[in-house]
Figure 1: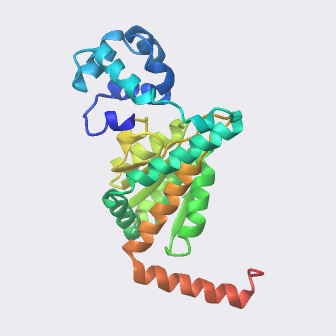
Figure 2: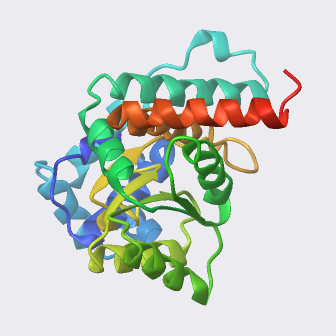
Length: 271
């Protein structure tokens, strides 16, 4: 459904409605314009204006399109599955969708080059995105000389972004996942105002963080269980790390070999 909004210039209010439609796809396709407006906490005319901005005569025409997108018949193989199996199969679909969209790797390559050239490289991930940012940073430090993990908010966050910029950073990588921390979005806004290029990993191209990034990379979050599944964002982060390595292959290989020699000398691993 995200593709429906891609490439269309939307106002902040229209982005809010679009994000609401994406997040509530299965139910929103059957709601009236007034019900969508109430769900997104906007006015009903704003919903109509969104439909017209997308090229439809009005919201009923957009709703018919939404129903086409969310109503394909469910795979018969899922019929006897329990809720845990359904959640994991849906997550597998998220990975298949991500793989399909990587058929054109240009944006990913551009993002990898931006991150490889930034010295230092700040990596931001707060709350639910903190483990993803930490995972990326752990491996990125093997191929990049100065990775700075920003996983806690508070008054020090802005200081640490400023310090990275003063040390020579030209880009910032941010992971912003539902529920979207206000501090993370404010940090992105400040980073761009200070001249940093922002590469964003998030779940929706019309999400609240997308307006504050130069390159937006998306991977769906599984929402079928009590807490979200992040398999697709994790895979996207590792694919982005590959792009970073590809942008500076000689240095990446040299640093990896140095690490392996050091690990062997210190007997870090049992195998």
